[in-house]
Length: 153
Ligand code: DQA
Figure 1 (cartoon, rainbow, N blue to C red):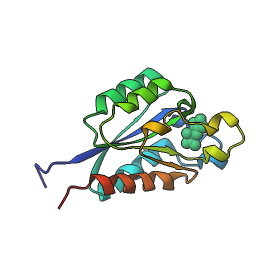
Figure 2: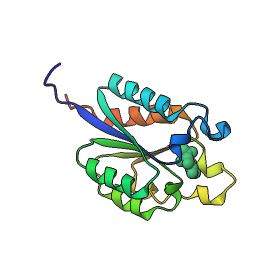
Figure 3: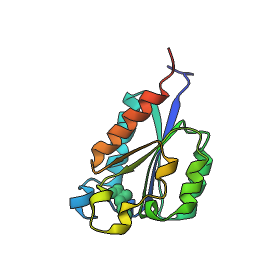
Figure 4: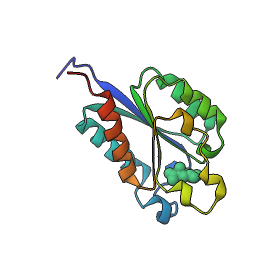
């Protein structure tokens, strides 16, 4: 309905996630980022949420986007890629986000052979985490946010 207030969420992707479709399908499936973003936007819309999508390979740009959206987005879904494991800058930016934040990973980071993937520096400032479920993990994140953000009554 025209003039209806809309609840907006953000879908944020970090470094190398623009290469989905080319990266190892064993961990990342075969869909492209555009396909993934498209399906999240549709799922969000079905749950009554507008969704802003953004990806960057520049850490400062992701920090600036988080700052820009920290009050405007009612909730966030973020997959920072490798920054998950070492970016205190992104962690500190997320700490200022007002709404709930969901950390999502396509692969099961904690059971991958590289030890450095087992630790997330953003985990303590996120409200929910999904890993190892591929694109379905994003659907879970949308559902989780929709449940918390739906208007009372
Ligand atoms: C990832 C896991 C990270 O370890 C990796 O660096 C990525 C993607 C995932 O979605 O499984 O780029 O966040």
